[in-house]
Length: 111
Image (cartoon, one colour):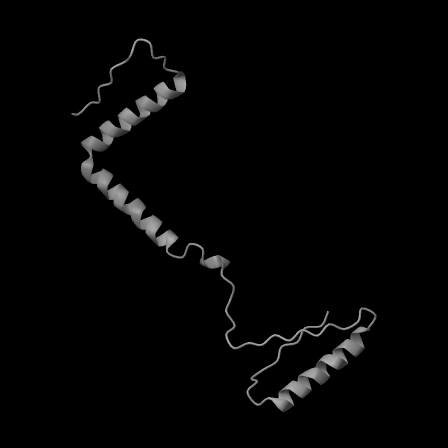
């Protein structure tokens, strides 16, 4: 069994937290040194989990790409009512569909 040996300096003061952490680290080292195969298996398992988790890291922040989409924004006066706004939207949609054969669909939003 391998044990870590530390030499203490007489002038050095050790607080409770550092003593506790040192004891825990020494115990973990001794346990992992005794069970090398288990330690390596746990390390490989944790490494595998990290690789799988971080493969798509940051991709949730990318917006959906609408390649080839054209956005047209028409701003109408604030005083216009909903019916008139809907009529103008339908008229714009009809004009766009009539003039361009390449358009597959038009999505409109009023409000």
